[in-house]
Length: 298
Image (cartoon, rainbow, N blue to C red; front, side, top):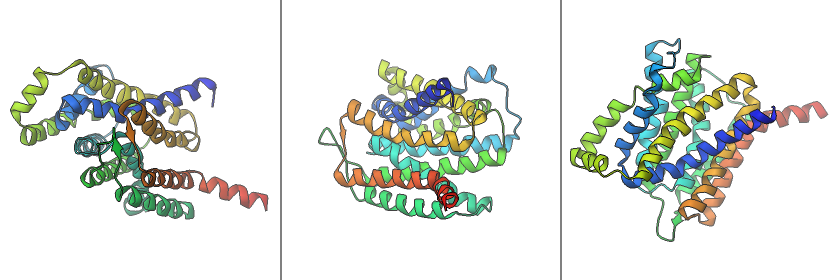
């Protein structure tokens, strides 16, 4: 990988890692369902007028928007609004890699490999450890069970979106993200009206502060459009096995930024759980390569 592309990969890691802190900031002034609607409205418009629609049937475009865009973030925003710390959210959301393995076996008839099973078991142990623990932010904030479960649901929706992406095949990822962003705003607005109410919506919009505005801009342009466009470029230029490991750095940035910017402090057990999740991901990503090297050395 060229130095320039290596820098671009690190930009994506930074953008996606800090994303969880930005969500927390956005939720301070905007309720979760309204935040989701505003994020994808800004991601879709005006970009949809300048980006060509990908050559994808509408049913798959809808499926992508309904899972990886709406489904993932309706759960993630809800989780972080009810007590899921930003740092741990960045770790638990990586369970998507293992949900993807399960869904690929169910819907695409893909087979598990030994490293997949071992990595899944290690990460599952880590998630169980995190689920039994609490985390403190500034000495007061605790991780709720609801926040943990909702984050796992977000990971499952991301995984379903990965299956949709495999069904779609090779397409312009930027176009896919932009046009799929047309799907979430309406259901987000309906949920906001039903659960957050017109008074809260009006109050959030009329009293919105600069930090919330900047958070929405970041989520729309940096985390969504910039992040996915650069990632798609790297995936199309290099083997997936060379690009995918960079995603392992996202939770590290997420934990570090949450600690520095939000003052979140993890319990030793939660740190151990996060380490197990990352270890399971490493086994899943690098296990096959290590096995091949060992076999070749014999």
